[in-house]
Image 1: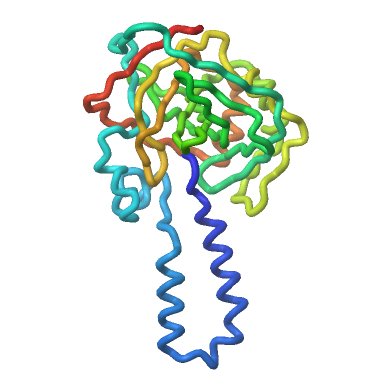
Image 2: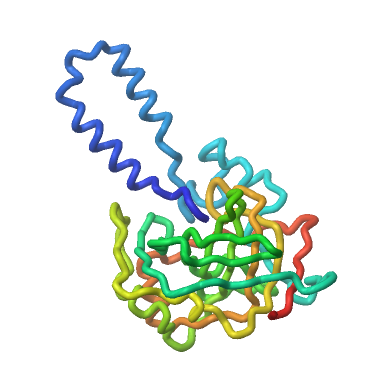
Length: 275
């Protein structure tokens, strides 16, 4: 999640840098040129995708830093078997502090990401405040409920002062047009961006949230390389809606950008009623 997915931009920058230096390479000793090329190769991140030989099954093979994608014990997403979720003790705190905010949109080659102009949005989970860092979308949904995917999934990625991550997962079903995203959806960048596209109207994230905020909690990971763990997941049970036209518009850009569900292992999934 976040994140992490700047490969096309970095590759472009490297190519431009090499082109700019080409006129001066004639006087550079061969050994130095070889060393220069080696260093350039070493800093270029491994390309990953959602299909083929660079898809989820091979993420750990693409780069040693992705090893946890295969070896991790607390990977995300998961299949949430609703009847097997547990409720222990008192209701755990979940507070949303969202306000209308200016955002810009980026196409990073893996999803559409919304970047806030200011850190005005936050959540409080069990007494810990997390500031909204970005939001992004997947289709179909990454999490499953009782083995079933939804049409899309929205991830709201938050970071605490101590750099801990908490992600709100919102399932999306086909239905009525989502008015909270109407203006931003007109600006979805269809190609990889080198500069964010500014959304002219502020986005009110509170309007995205469902009325019933009953949720599932579990310890998981990022759902994209490097699949880092120790991520607090809060997945709301009630889905929100987007129109078929809105969903289709996203799928014209990203036909399928979801990671398959991962083993639950010994983790527990707790259900928390709406406060």
